[in-house]
Image (tube, rainbow, N blue to C red; front, side):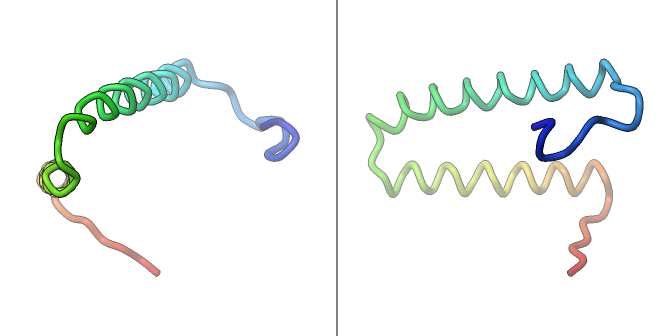
Length: 72
């Protein structure tokens, strides 16, 4: 990573490191649990649940921040 991005110019924040490690742990758990759950669920049902919870997460994000804009 250091070779691609170069040395950091600013101060490294402990909160940033904690959030990055936390995201990695949550995603790892998501992958492990998702593989175990989808082994026993038909693909169409799993896709429906994924779409449902994705829509709910976007809805919660939109309500929390008040506005979602996409700039191109």
